[in-house]
Image 1 (tube, rainbow, N blue to C red):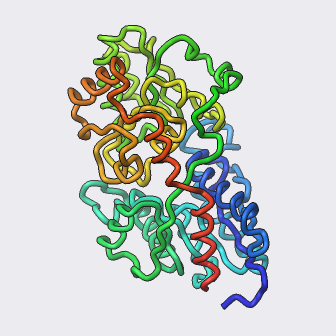
Image 2: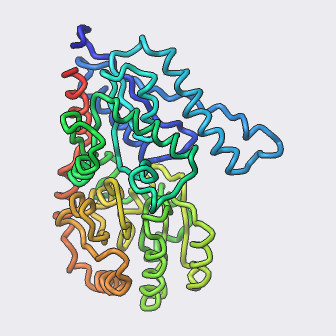
Image 3: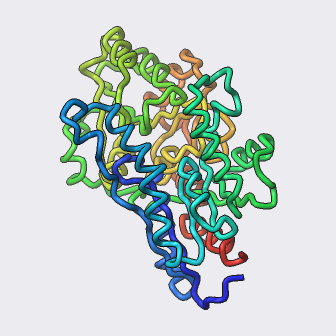
Length: 380
């Protein structure tokens, strides 16, 4: 039992330079909510050292992705642990916001450290090595991360589906699992539109209809489906555009865009603030989420909070988040996706009404998220 009258909680964040908006958001919201609503019970402070560039400083490697990735690994596994060892006496408990940093548990008092596990993708090379073969050094690195997760006194998760996956994996003691869903940031609301924010992104969104996808371009996001479906829908609605936020096209995706002949109708935006993103949600004709797997599906929740019309893959996690506020299509069923989007563009009244969308989003709260996490540490 912690004997201090006020719990000192260190919130261990991702390196800012890695640019993971969802992980940065989770850390920011936790810290903000604890400081706002639990100031008498906890002293919450972010722990986030700056990334030290080494390989990127070498002239022969400057600007190359391999140099950045090498610096990431060195900072994650060498510099960050050293930084934490110097701060052990500053906190009573530690909360690691991202399970891919769970190896840091080895440097902390495990009985007073928790980890938020957002998904199991990080451990796929160990759990299903046939589908994701990796070199020996990578598996060893992942095994150290997993062992750190297994040492933690509490492991938080965001959806019931994720909880079931953790139980089925038998990686963790069920007694240490804590359900803590995400929330909706205040920037995401039904209006009015932030025209100043929109003016900062040159996509013609004031007068051109567009569909929106928010997220990365990794394989499970099924960007191939997104592009094929958009091309099919655009054949009927020639003025329509596709706006993709947060990702970076792979070479294969760029080839697909060219092959479909939609280069001029596609825009990709990165580095947007939440106000601008919310304005895009509100202006989009439809928000699309064709993923085949998700840890939570935060864009679905954000879009619903803006009263946006959402079409998402019919997978358990997105059903859990979107509920009756969204429309669903089978994963990778191109004809169903195209027909559904075309129908909603023509007859939007067939979608859940805006009040229904807002009601669904209002079930999720960052305040409750922070309260749940604080209670878990207060019991230690």
